[in-house]
Image 1 (cartoon, rainbow, N blue to C red):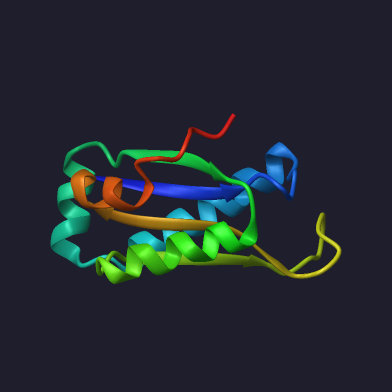
Image 2: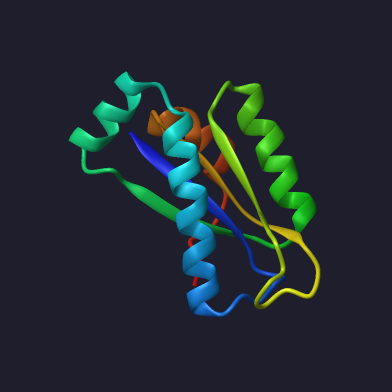
Length: 113
């Protein structure tokens, strides 16, 4: 069991803003997850992996792919009150769910650096 959070690298978010956006995505997706899956994920250590995508279009494409496999997702749109000048999508959480299923969607992505 794991959860992945995809982060747009083209926005060049500062570390604090990035952390807040990832946290929003993780929590929102977890809250959408059925209790049985959530419990299994928690028992296994609540694994989270943060991956990078280069653009908004990539983020939206991965959301669509995940939803085709019936994975829970949470797409986060920043309100542009601090760093961004206009509201925009910043990240996407997928899962928690079985690693094998999530890897079908995100297995080709690299860790965020």
